Length: 170
Image 1 (cartoon, helix red, strand yellow):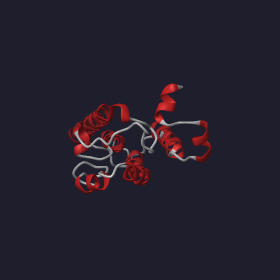
Image 2: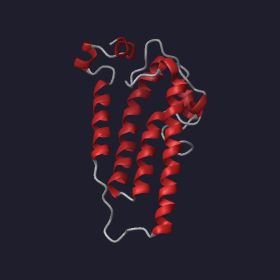
Image 3: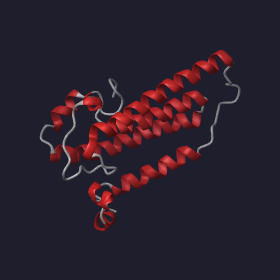
Image 4: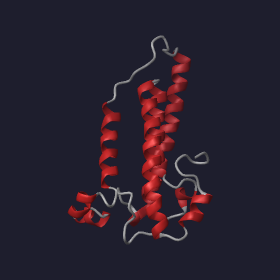
């Protein structure tokens, strides 16, 4: 229970959603949905072995990059880590490590892992979910960044220097 309170969860905040609890709940539902989502391939679009192996390799490479982003994001945040979009009271603004190439590497990792799985499985349904995750995390991070800008005066300059969700792209 102490870990939850350290992260900023409280009974009162769940009632109001004042720290972004509803974003976390929706995110959990999306994670569950993508795991339960069936693979849907376009009829007649089955890849022949050389192309299939290429798709597996590309999907695997993207997935591995996604895992590195997420893992390094968790490690670099250290004690500032919280599942809530609202920053921890005792948190610091991390701008180094993986946070020097993307502002939300954990979100990026989820998007890219879903994309990698979609490519490896040639799954249109999972590709659609990768786009859904991009839209969801773009909206969630917009709210999070408003709170971060309120707490950290350096945040707007950081936003100008570093891409939001997709390293070097967006």
